[in-house]
Image 1 (cartoon, rainbow over the protein chains, first blue to last red):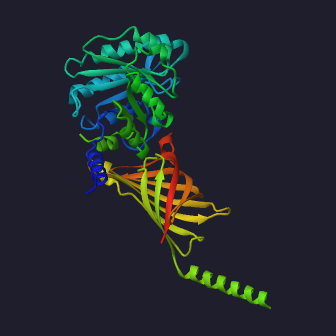
Image 2 (spheres, chains in turn orange, cyan; image 1 turned 60 degrees about the vertical axis):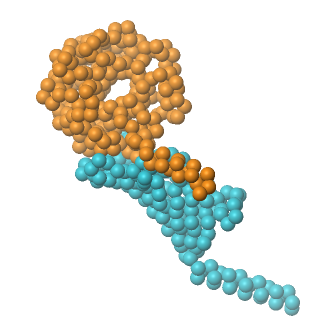
Image 3 (tube, each protein chain N blue to C red; image 1 turned 180 degrees about the horizontal axis):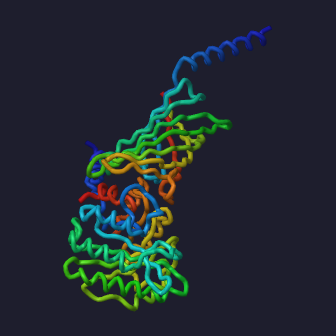
Length: 252
Length: 171
């Protein structure tokens, strides 16, 4: 057997031994059960049905918050007058945690709270975080909770960075990024960046890694190209609409 | 008179060659390298048709299941176009292993390819581009999911654009 054949055989054996990444699996926009339907994003029925997937599938859930009419609402976008209050959505999560306990695949339940940009009302979005913390503290002594705060709005994140939350909640701060934005102003404040593979090129992933950020990948569907990105970039968090498919791919 | 005889001889030879071409199926073995797209970068194919300048059926298979427990199979029609271009159109099946079975993804493919002025022994090379549209996923005991043609989703990952280079060895 020539050295070249031995080298090829070793390379093949090494590749065959590769394991799939094991990211923290989050329910995208509180809507990850049944078939994909974006009109159900951040609605109470979808949140309740998604949590029924249970800890064998979900490590956590993503909840979007908007500030309107002097209240923090659970909604994907500003403008829905019938949107429920954020605290009501968080009550559903707390009830779930009190009922089922921590996730099957890890000791920590992860709640990703995305603050939707709202122009002049951005300052008030910080109150959403305070309300989330107050609600989650009801259960965080029994179930360890990691609270991820993210936003597309860099000014909002900068303000939030000054007001981090102490234990028992482990709070991480992340930027939602559509393109390869300049994160210079937030460099020392961020823990992770949240991106979708279709808007992110290979140099961007390298830059995030060089700057020490964890990566959260999100997508509605779990397609072969999305799985390719997960396998290639091994993100810390994955937030998807097809959570059961993703769990089947990751394994328990 | 001699010129007429030569012309008749050439015409006879050409007719004989055409007859040969009609009688022999055009079979090619392909090796293709492609950019990303959720499929393995190196796959192998076989193209079979009545002759090389007619429509041929192409089956492209994927031997790399043992690497990441997924395989991609393409079934294409390769249609000659003017100016040595080719249209490739067909279906792609991707099988991904999940905990409770195989999840199958079905896509439509459409692309064009053109020959390169590169030859290594008997192998000719083509370069091309391809658009893949994911239509549906099913299997593994989970709900069937429509993608690119489905309302209520904005799933950019359902579409992928690929560049590819093929090495073709005629049998």
